[in-house]
Image (cartoon, rainbow, N blue to C red):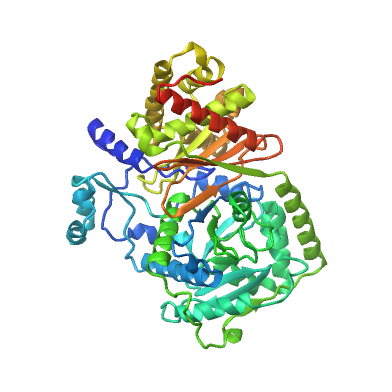
Length: 598
């Protein structure tokens, strides 16, 4: 840990400013050593093939539930500001080229590290970046610290590309082959590959990529009778068995091309109708046109609506959001082609390989069974969203309230109004300031939020607007304290997780604490919440982590608040959002000195 209490408080201020809330799952804090190494080039450990093996990877990779819905989230891009660039072929070409540019920058060691700048006027400048390059790495961290610049761990980044989660009996495997040069494209359930890097590692010309994608989009072949893409949506042990049958049937080399591809580009043949349709499409789709095991799928609909759907075992939203932001910025500000650009005069029929899989009766039966399970599960999922337009971050900060605490308080009030109780709530907090850090848990439900929620929901007439606002302020202060503790590795969830893991590893009887019903209840997270705010993000989401829960994706923008909620048949997402809207209206009334309407 850092030397003094003052330094810790200073560091916590930074962490609170830039907390990245990953989606449903978090990380065991493996070390208490802060990562303050700053070369202002991508940290070399970010390119190591030896990521830590341990409890948190075991947690992900030994899970046997299907990864679609249970683990994989999505983030959708805002449209290109220039409407004509949202043509599917144009945007697919530009985003593919921008993604490969990011890959090249990363692998060449030129990607700027993730850094929190407490005083950007001093540290986030070209002058400082040039100077710090000449400082030995053993001292550069101190130079960065002197100007309040705090680099974050980037060890997850190398798994962004050429990576796939492979199903194995009992424990899956993370596979990466950074020598592969081809892109995987899915359209109408068909698989295609073509090179996006040449033999020297240079990016293939944008006009060639455009030509190859145009060729794929012009393929009029009907959808396959047995779409292979359903298989990664299966239970992991079942998928592992079926994959072995695929290999035995002569598909090993074909699967290798899928697994080693730079990433998976999914071209959908329909436009997006609205935000709810967008969420369903990008979170799960129809099961035929995604490869859920890839580190990420870049999905582009017929109207150019784009999103990233990513597998969660290899990393969290920190790496994905950086990639996401860079791709959006590069593809919109420095597009590789224009809508008027002509594809290269190249023989795409020779350059593009359409993959063919050999399927025996057992595999066909497995695909049919996977489809039936997939369709049945998706029918139980509801997604809905709201946009609260009365105010956002700017107004709340003027009220000296944490915007995140207000959003979390709204969820507590909403659940109390809808179901009459307070339940276990999960909010993820990045610990990327630690070496190999992932996340820790913020527990937003507290005695303060319970008291405040009951005052607003059950007895608003007994309290003045000033008293209600005072209770909100107490919730905000306590939420800020919890946030700082989690960011500094002082939360309790990961430590209890680690102790339980070590107990099992050593064959020791489980301590009574873990058998207590309260421990089971607090880990049954009915409200699982996550927030990401970026100019590039339109909307994001994930499924509930328990059958009777809500998956709550939200963002507090400058002047409005967005909330995207998922639920299964046991809960009512639309009603919950109506209660969230009511909670926000009541809190804004209280902040404006108005009485609360019952």
